[in-house]
Length: 193
Image 1: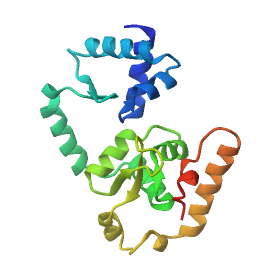
Image 2: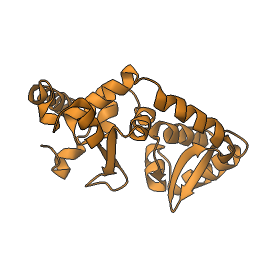
Image 3: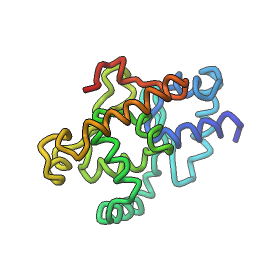
Image 4: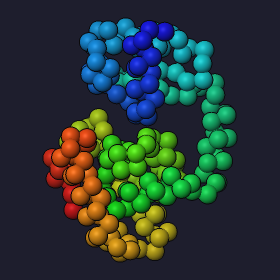
C-alpha cells in the first residue's frame, strides 16, 4: 500500500465519520487526484478484510465488512448491556456541560479520539447528534431527553456546578484557541448559550 493510502486509512480511522475527497486531500497534504488514486488503492486492499471503504457521493468512510455484521451485532449487544466506562461517563459530562458540542471539541477536551464512545452513547440513546449549523459535513452533540430524565433533571442547568463548570470548559477551549491549538467553531455558529 502506498504511503498516501496508509495516511488516508489513518485519517479515516481517526475521523470515525465520512470525509469528503477535498477534506481527505487537505488533511493528507496531497492533491485531490492523488488522494482519489490512493482511495481506489485502499479500497482494493481492504476488499478481503474486516473493514471496507464506503463511498457515498464524494464522501468516504471506513465501515465494517457486511460479512462481519453478525460478530459486530454480538459486540454491540454486549456494549449496550455493559456498564458505562469511565471514558463514556467523561464524554457524557463534556456533552452535558458544553451542550451543544462538536466532536473536535470533545476530542480536544478529552485528549483522545471519541468516535467509538460517541457511537456507543448514541446507540444507548444517551445523546443526540445533529448537523453542525455552520459545517454541514460535521455534527454537534447534545444530551438526549432520556439522559436528562435518567439523571432526574429538567435541563442541564440543574446539574451540579453547571455554570462554573461550563465556564471553565469554555475558558479552556478559548485559551487553547489563543495558542493556535484548537479552532472553536461554535463561536462562528452562535451556538454558545
